[in-house]
Structure formats: structure tokens, C-alpha cells
Length: 100
Image 1 (cartoon, rainbow, N blue to C red):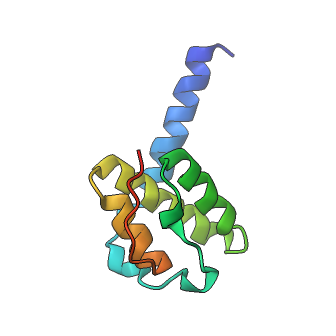
Image 2: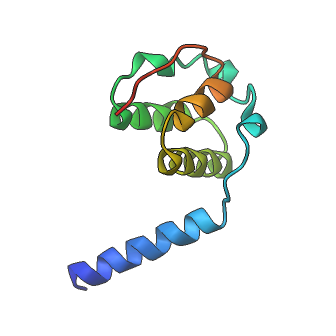
């Protein structure tokens, strides 16, 4: 399989993944992960934050994790502070991280 074919396969998988999980309002996640006591504001780099969120969600149901991951991707695509607003609602932190 060529690199181009692999890239197209990956792109198709991502499009399918996102298409099945449309963007939902932040309010749907209000307090959903407060019990995990995760301080997402401690992370300054988006890549480190993303990995930390994935790790902290490990005890959560697989489909619920996939859904929240899709919502994070939607917020990154939206831009601005959309991701930070989602994390604040879901994890209950009022601080703001400036992730790049």
C-alpha cells in the first residue's frame, strides 16, 4: 500500500468518524467529567493537553470517549477558545488555558 493510499484511507476514516458524531452544544457536557478532578488549565500546549485528556478519560466508556474526542476535534476546527470552553464545561474548571 502506498503512502498516498494510506493517507486517503486515514482521511476517509476521520471523515466517517466525524460525520457520525456531529458537533453538539457544550451544554450537553455540563459537569460530565467533574468527578475526574482533571485540571486541564495546567497545560499550555494543545498536543500535551490532548494526550492528557485521552489518558484521564481511560476509565470512561469507549463510545463516550470517542464522542468526547470528536467534540474536541470539532472545537479545534472551530478555532478561537471553543476547545477551552468545552473543557471548562465538561471538567468544571473555570480557568482558561491558552493552548497552541
